[in-house]
Image (cartoon, rainbow, N blue to C red; front, side, top):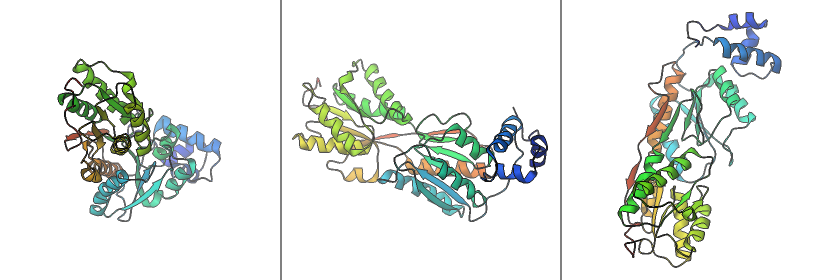
Length: 342
Protein backbone atom coordinates (compact mmCIF):
# COMPACT_ATOMS: atom_id res chain seq x y z
CA UNK A 1 0.00 0.00 0.00
CA UNK A 2 1.34 3.45 -0.94
CA UNK A 3 1.67 5.86 1.98
CA UNK A 4 1.67 9.65 1.84
CA UNK A 5 5.39 9.73 2.66
CA UNK A 6 6.31 7.26 -0.10
CA UNK A 7 4.12 8.84 -2.79
CA UNK A 8 5.85 10.75 -5.59
CA UNK A 9 5.87 14.45 -6.36
CA UNK A 10 4.99 15.88 -9.75
CA UNK A 11 8.68 16.25 -10.56
CA UNK A 12 9.41 12.61 -9.70
CA UNK A 13 6.43 11.41 -11.76
CA UNK A 14 7.60 13.53 -14.69
CA UNK A 15 11.09 12.03 -14.50
CA UNK A 16 9.72 8.45 -14.50
CA UNK A 17 7.32 9.19 -17.36
CA UNK A 18 9.92 11.04 -19.41
CA UNK A 19 7.73 14.15 -19.77
CA UNK A 20 7.72 17.66 -18.39
CA UNK A 21 6.35 18.60 -14.99
CA UNK A 22 3.83 20.82 -16.80
CA UNK A 23 2.50 17.76 -18.63
CA UNK A 24 2.09 15.80 -15.39
CA UNK A 25 0.40 18.83 -13.81
CA UNK A 26 -2.08 18.94 -16.71
CA UNK A 27 -2.93 15.25 -16.18
CA UNK A 28 -3.33 15.72 -12.42
CA UNK A 29 -5.60 18.72 -12.94
CA UNK A 30 -7.72 17.07 -15.64
CA UNK A 31 -6.61 19.31 -18.50
CA UNK A 32 -7.51 17.98 -21.94
CA UNK A 33 -4.43 19.09 -23.96
CA UNK A 34 -2.47 15.88 -23.26
CA UNK A 35 -2.30 12.90 -25.62
CA UNK A 36 -4.24 9.81 -24.54
CA UNK A 37 -1.05 7.72 -24.46
CA UNK A 38 0.78 10.19 -22.22
CA UNK A 39 -2.25 10.56 -19.96
CA UNK A 40 -2.53 6.79 -19.61
CA UNK A 41 1.18 6.46 -18.78
CA UNK A 42 1.07 9.16 -16.10
CA UNK A 43 -2.15 7.82 -14.56
CA UNK A 44 -0.63 4.34 -14.42
CA UNK A 45 2.38 5.73 -12.53
CA UNK A 46 0.03 7.51 -10.11
CA UNK A 47 -1.88 4.26 -9.55
CA UNK A 48 1.36 2.38 -8.94
CA UNK A 49 3.26 4.88 -6.80
CA UNK A 50 0.72 7.41 -5.59
CA UNK A 51 0.92 11.18 -5.85
CA UNK A 52 2.00 13.42 -2.97
CA UNK A 53 -0.79 15.98 -2.83
CA UNK A 54 -0.47 19.30 -1.09
CA UNK A 55 -3.03 19.69 1.64
CA UNK A 56 -4.77 22.99 1.32
CA UNK A 57 -7.85 24.58 2.77
CA UNK A 58 -10.52 25.48 0.25
CA UNK A 59 -10.94 29.15 -0.60
CA UNK A 60 -13.94 30.97 0.92
CA UNK A 61 -15.63 30.93 -2.50
CA UNK A 62 -15.04 27.21 -3.04
CA UNK A 63 -17.69 25.33 -4.99
CA UNK A 64 -19.45 22.13 -3.97
CA UNK A 65 -20.67 20.25 -7.06
CA UNK A 66 -24.04 18.62 -6.27
CA UNK A 67 -25.23 16.35 -9.07
CA UNK A 68 -28.65 14.66 -9.27
CA UNK A 69 -29.98 12.05 -11.68
CA UNK A 70 -33.23 14.07 -11.81
CA UNK A 71 -34.42 17.36 -10.29
CA UNK A 72 -38.07 16.55 -9.62
CA UNK A 73 -40.24 16.61 -6.51
CA UNK A 74 -39.30 17.16 -2.88
CA UNK A 75 -36.45 14.60 -2.68
CA UNK A 76 -33.77 16.89 -4.21
CA UNK A 77 -35.14 19.92 -2.33
CA UNK A 78 -34.50 18.25 1.05
CA UNK A 79 -30.96 17.30 0.00
CA UNK A 80 -30.15 20.78 -1.31
CA UNK A 81 -31.35 22.24 2.02
CA UNK A 82 -28.97 19.98 3.94
CA UNK A 83 -25.94 20.81 1.78
CA UNK A 84 -26.77 24.53 1.82
CA UNK A 85 -26.82 24.53 5.63
CA UNK A 86 -23.22 23.31 5.72
CA UNK A 87 -22.24 25.58 2.82
CA UNK A 88 -23.52 28.70 4.60
CA UNK A 89 -21.58 27.84 7.74
CA UNK A 90 -18.33 27.37 5.79
CA UNK A 91 -18.87 30.13 3.20
CA UNK A 92 -19.12 27.75 0.27
CA UNK A 93 -21.07 27.96 -2.98
CA UNK A 94 -23.29 25.05 -4.08
CA UNK A 95 -23.55 24.26 -7.78
CA UNK A 96 -26.43 21.95 -8.81
CA UNK A 97 -26.52 19.93 -12.01
CA UNK A 98 -28.84 17.26 -13.40
CA UNK A 99 -28.27 14.07 -15.37
CA UNK A 100 -31.66 13.84 -17.10
CA UNK A 101 -32.92 10.35 -16.25
CA UNK A 102 -29.34 9.00 -16.24
CA UNK A 103 -27.49 7.66 -13.25
CA UNK A 104 -23.94 7.89 -14.66
CA UNK A 105 -22.47 11.28 -15.63
CA UNK A 106 -21.22 11.60 -19.18
CA UNK A 107 -17.74 12.69 -20.22
CA UNK A 108 -18.83 16.29 -20.78
CA UNK A 109 -19.95 16.64 -17.16
CA UNK A 110 -16.67 15.20 -15.90
CA UNK A 111 -14.57 17.54 -18.07
CA UNK A 112 -16.56 20.49 -16.72
CA UNK A 113 -15.87 19.47 -13.12
CA UNK A 114 -12.16 19.14 -13.85
CA UNK A 115 -12.04 22.56 -15.53
CA UNK A 116 -13.63 24.12 -12.44
CA UNK A 117 -11.17 22.37 -10.07
CA UNK A 118 -9.28 25.57 -9.10
CA UNK A 119 -12.46 26.88 -7.39
CA UNK A 120 -14.04 23.56 -6.44
CA UNK A 121 -13.67 21.43 -3.34
CA UNK A 122 -15.37 18.28 -4.59
CA UNK A 123 -18.45 16.44 -5.81
CA UNK A 124 -21.51 15.01 -4.06
CA UNK A 125 -23.30 12.65 -6.45
CA UNK A 126 -26.91 11.88 -5.43
CA UNK A 127 -28.59 8.57 -6.36
CA UNK A 128 -25.98 8.29 -9.08
CA UNK A 129 -23.06 6.06 -9.97
CA UNK A 130 -19.74 6.89 -11.56
CA UNK A 131 -17.68 4.47 -13.61
CA UNK A 132 -14.34 3.27 -12.30
CA UNK A 133 -12.49 5.38 -14.85
CA UNK A 134 -14.45 8.50 -13.86
CA UNK A 135 -13.64 7.90 -10.20
CA UNK A 136 -9.97 7.44 -11.05
CA UNK A 137 -9.83 10.69 -13.02
CA UNK A 138 -11.42 12.60 -10.15
CA UNK A 139 -9.01 11.01 -7.67
CA UNK A 140 -5.96 11.66 -9.85
CA UNK A 141 -7.08 15.29 -10.21
CA UNK A 142 -7.49 15.70 -6.43
CA UNK A 143 -11.27 16.13 -6.67
CA UNK A 144 -12.90 14.53 -3.60
CA UNK A 145 -16.07 12.53 -4.25
CA UNK A 146 -18.87 11.47 -1.88
CA UNK A 147 -21.85 9.38 -3.01
CA UNK A 148 -25.17 10.21 -1.35
CA UNK A 149 -27.88 7.53 -1.47
CA UNK A 150 -25.73 5.66 -4.05
CA UNK A 151 -27.56 3.95 -6.88
CA UNK A 152 -25.22 0.95 -6.81
CA UNK A 153 -22.19 -0.36 -4.91
CA UNK A 154 -20.04 2.71 -4.11
CA UNK A 155 -16.88 0.75 -4.83
CA UNK A 156 -13.73 0.36 -2.79
CA UNK A 157 -12.52 3.51 -1.10
CA UNK A 158 -15.37 5.78 -2.27
CA UNK A 159 -17.07 7.49 0.70
CA UNK A 160 -20.86 7.21 0.79
CA UNK A 161 -23.89 8.17 2.89
CA UNK A 162 -27.12 6.18 2.87
CA UNK A 163 -30.14 5.40 5.04
CA UNK A 164 -31.19 2.22 6.84
CA UNK A 165 -33.13 0.89 3.88
CA UNK A 166 -33.25 -2.74 5.01
CA UNK A 167 -34.39 -1.85 8.54
CA UNK A 168 -36.94 0.57 7.06
CA UNK A 169 -38.42 -2.15 4.86
CA UNK A 170 -38.52 -4.45 7.88
CA UNK A 171 -40.28 -1.84 10.06
CA UNK A 172 -42.87 -0.98 7.39
CA UNK A 173 -43.83 -4.62 6.87
CA UNK A 174 -43.81 -5.44 10.59
CA UNK A 175 -46.23 -2.56 11.20
CA UNK A 176 -48.68 -4.04 8.72
CA UNK A 177 -48.24 -7.54 10.15
CA UNK A 178 -48.90 -6.25 13.66
CA UNK A 179 -52.16 -4.70 12.42
CA UNK A 180 -53.23 -8.18 11.28
CA UNK A 181 -52.48 -8.01 7.55
CA UNK A 182 -51.22 -11.17 5.88
CA UNK A 183 -51.70 -10.39 2.18
CA UNK A 184 -49.16 -7.60 2.03
CA UNK A 185 -48.00 -6.49 -1.41
CA UNK A 186 -44.85 -4.56 -2.25
CA UNK A 187 -44.10 -2.17 -5.10
CA UNK A 188 -40.32 -2.11 -5.42
CA UNK A 189 -38.09 0.46 -7.03
CA UNK A 190 -35.85 -0.27 -10.03
CA UNK A 191 -33.76 -3.44 -9.79
CA UNK A 192 -30.43 -1.62 -10.19
CA UNK A 193 -30.99 0.55 -7.09
CA UNK A 194 -29.33 -0.54 -3.86
CA UNK A 195 -32.08 1.12 -1.82
CA UNK A 196 -34.79 -0.76 -3.70
CA UNK A 197 -33.17 -4.14 -3.16
CA UNK A 198 -32.51 -3.45 0.52
CA UNK A 199 -36.12 -2.38 1.20
CA UNK A 200 -37.39 -5.47 -0.62
CA UNK A 201 -35.08 -7.67 1.48
CA UNK A 202 -36.42 -6.06 4.66
CA UNK A 203 -39.99 -6.80 3.53
CA UNK A 204 -39.18 -10.46 2.84
CA UNK A 205 -37.34 -10.81 6.16
CA UNK A 206 -40.34 -9.47 8.10
CA UNK A 207 -42.70 -11.91 6.37
CA UNK A 208 -40.32 -14.80 6.97
CA UNK A 209 -39.94 -13.95 10.67
CA UNK A 210 -43.74 -13.87 11.01
CA UNK A 211 -44.12 -17.21 9.24
CA UNK A 212 -46.00 -15.64 6.32
CA UNK A 213 -45.11 -17.17 2.94
CA UNK A 214 -43.79 -14.72 0.32
CA UNK A 215 -46.27 -14.68 -2.58
CA UNK A 216 -44.44 -13.58 -5.77
CA UNK A 217 -47.76 -12.41 -7.24
CA UNK A 218 -47.83 -9.69 -4.57
CA UNK A 219 -44.60 -8.09 -5.77
CA UNK A 220 -44.76 -5.35 -8.39
CA UNK A 221 -41.68 -3.86 -10.02
CA UNK A 222 -41.90 -0.08 -9.84
CA UNK A 223 -39.61 2.81 -10.73
CA UNK A 224 -39.95 5.16 -7.72
CA UNK A 225 -42.38 7.31 -9.77
CA UNK A 226 -46.07 8.07 -9.19
CA UNK A 227 -47.03 6.62 -12.56
CA UNK A 228 -45.27 3.34 -11.81
CA UNK A 229 -46.97 3.09 -8.43
CA UNK A 230 -50.36 3.65 -10.06
CA UNK A 231 -49.81 0.99 -12.74
CA UNK A 232 -48.52 -1.63 -10.32
CA UNK A 233 -51.23 -0.93 -7.72
CA UNK A 234 -53.98 -1.34 -10.36
CA UNK A 235 -52.54 -4.74 -11.30
CA UNK A 236 -52.21 -5.87 -7.69
CA UNK A 237 -55.68 -4.69 -6.66
CA UNK A 238 -57.29 -6.49 -9.61
CA UNK A 239 -55.91 -9.89 -8.54
CA UNK A 240 -58.56 -12.52 -7.70
CA UNK A 241 -57.30 -12.41 -4.10
CA UNK A 242 -56.00 -8.83 -3.80
CA UNK A 243 -53.76 -7.52 -1.02
CA UNK A 244 -55.21 -5.79 2.03
CA UNK A 245 -52.06 -3.66 2.36
CA UNK A 246 -49.33 -2.30 0.08
CA UNK A 247 -45.79 -1.25 1.01
CA UNK A 248 -44.95 1.19 -1.79
CA UNK A 249 -41.17 1.58 -0.94
CA UNK A 250 -41.24 5.33 -1.64
CA UNK A 251 -43.71 8.17 -1.15
CA UNK A 252 -44.18 8.84 -4.86
CA UNK A 253 -45.34 5.30 -5.52
CA UNK A 254 -47.57 5.50 -2.44
CA UNK A 255 -49.37 8.46 -4.04
CA UNK A 256 -49.79 6.28 -7.13
CA UNK A 257 -51.44 3.65 -4.90
CA UNK A 258 -53.80 6.32 -3.57
CA UNK A 259 -54.88 7.14 -7.14
CA UNK A 260 -55.36 3.46 -7.98
CA UNK A 261 -57.51 2.92 -4.88
CA UNK A 262 -59.67 5.92 -5.77
CA UNK A 263 -60.05 4.70 -9.35
CA UNK A 264 -61.25 1.31 -8.09
CA UNK A 265 -63.58 2.72 -5.44
CA UNK A 266 -61.47 1.57 -2.46
CA UNK A 267 -61.10 3.59 0.72
CA UNK A 268 -57.80 4.07 2.57
CA UNK A 269 -57.36 2.68 5.21
CA UNK A 270 -60.78 0.99 5.52
CA UNK A 271 -60.30 -1.20 2.42
CA UNK A 272 -56.56 -0.88 1.87
CA UNK A 273 -53.62 0.10 4.09
CA UNK A 274 -50.66 1.92 2.48
CA UNK A 275 -47.11 2.56 3.71
CA UNK A 276 -44.57 4.72 1.88
CA UNK A 277 -40.87 5.47 2.36
CA UNK A 278 -39.09 8.87 2.64
CA UNK A 279 -41.54 11.03 4.68
CA UNK A 280 -41.34 13.96 2.28
CA UNK A 281 -43.04 17.08 3.73
CA UNK A 282 -46.27 16.92 1.65
CA UNK A 283 -47.06 13.39 2.88
CA UNK A 284 -48.50 14.69 6.15
CA UNK A 285 -51.06 16.58 4.05
CA UNK A 286 -52.09 13.64 1.86
CA UNK A 287 -55.69 12.47 2.29
CA UNK A 288 -55.44 10.51 4.49
CA UNK A 289 -51.99 11.48 5.87
CA UNK A 290 -49.50 8.81 4.82
CA UNK A 291 -47.89 6.27 7.15
CA UNK A 292 -44.30 6.10 5.95
CA UNK A 293 -40.67 5.45 6.80
CA UNK A 294 -38.77 8.65 7.54
CA UNK A 295 -35.51 8.84 5.64
CA UNK A 296 -33.42 11.72 7.07
CA UNK A 297 -32.54 13.25 3.70
CA UNK A 298 -31.39 16.66 4.97
CA UNK A 299 -29.24 15.05 7.67
CA UNK A 300 -27.78 12.64 5.10
CA UNK A 301 -26.91 15.63 2.92
CA UNK A 302 -25.23 17.46 5.81
CA UNK A 303 -23.23 14.34 6.63
CA UNK A 304 -22.08 14.04 3.00
CA UNK A 305 -21.11 17.72 2.90
CA UNK A 306 -19.06 17.43 6.11
CA UNK A 307 -17.31 14.33 4.74
CA UNK A 308 -16.46 16.28 1.58
CA UNK A 309 -15.03 19.14 3.63
CA UNK A 310 -12.81 16.76 5.58
CA UNK A 311 -11.51 15.25 2.35
CA UNK A 312 -10.85 18.71 0.90
CA UNK A 313 -8.88 19.60 4.04
CA UNK A 314 -6.81 16.43 3.70
CA UNK A 315 -8.28 15.01 6.92
CA UNK A 316 -9.00 11.28 7.34
CA UNK A 317 -12.64 10.19 7.62
CA UNK A 318 -13.63 8.29 10.79
CA UNK A 319 -15.64 5.99 8.50
CA UNK A 320 -15.98 5.86 4.74
CA UNK A 321 -19.58 4.62 4.74
CA UNK A 322 -22.21 6.28 6.91
CA UNK A 323 -25.70 4.83 7.31
CA UNK A 324 -28.31 6.97 9.07
CA UNK A 325 -31.27 5.42 10.87
CA UNK A 326 -34.78 5.42 9.43
CA UNK A 327 -37.97 5.68 11.50
CA UNK A 328 -41.56 4.48 11.12
CA UNK A 329 -44.02 7.41 11.15
CA UNK A 330 -47.56 6.17 11.77
CA UNK A 331 -50.36 8.35 10.41
CA UNK A 332 -53.82 7.57 9.06
CA UNK A 333 -53.24 5.40 5.97
CA UNK A 334 -52.93 2.13 7.90
CA UNK A 335 -55.49 0.19 9.95
CA UNK A 336 -56.39 -3.45 10.70
CA UNK A 337 -57.90 -5.32 7.74
CA UNK A 338 -61.65 -5.88 7.64
CA UNK A 339 -60.99 -9.60 7.99
CA UNK A 340 -58.41 -10.10 10.80
CA UNK A 341 -57.09 -13.12 8.93
CA UNK A 342 -56.01 -10.80 6.13
